Structures are given as C-alpha cells and as structure tokens.
Image (tube, rainbow, N blue to C red):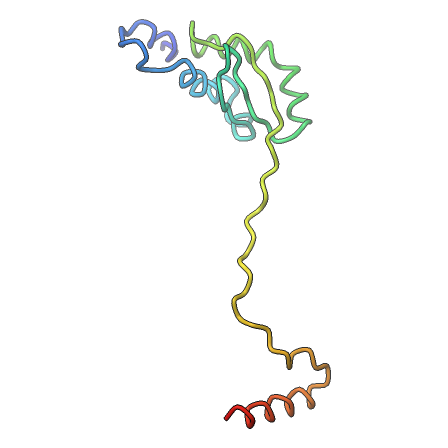
Length: 130
C-alpha cells in the first residue's frame, strides 16, 4: 500500500490544487500516531518548517528529542512535499468559558443576617409598594 504523499506525486493534479501546507498538516497525525496527535496540532508551514503547537514545555522538550525520527516519518508519509524542519511551540493558554453574570438583581434584604428581621423587612417593603 502506497503512502498518500507518494500517491499524490504520481497523480497529475493541476498546480495549487493541494498546498504543501495542507499535505504537511494532514501527514502530521499519521507520522506521529494517535497519542501524540491528540496532544499536538500542526498549525502552519512556514518556509519548509512545520509549526506544531504542544500542550506544555514538557511535551515541547520530549518532542524536540524525537525531532529526527518525526522528520523521517513525515518524509515517509508525505513524500517529497514533507517539511524539512519542525518547530514545537507551547500552545498559548486559553481562558476557560465563564458563566454569564446573573441578570437577577440582588435583593437588599439578603444582606440582613437575622432571618426574622429579614422577613419583617420584606413584609414592610411589600406593604409600602402595594
């Protein structure tokens, strides 16, 4: 069974149909396997260098030590269009989704510590506004 990169090289597609960046991004998960691909993301191909975002500095160091093997696997998978270098960047922290603030106005009676006084205050307020 032939690799996708070698197969694409044999097919005579018009130039620009498939960009080298698309080939490199698609080859990344196949080259590194599902475990590493789940924690990384190929984001760009800049001047023949594939930029890969990783979760943290530990992943960055570990993948840097495997750089030679990864480049060889990328060449096997992508063929001639494989990136010549890989750069590992720590993914910028993203803020977690926060709940919207409550639109319900706070009742000033809630600040009264004594429960009996709180009830009396609310009763008197209802009488005044009725």
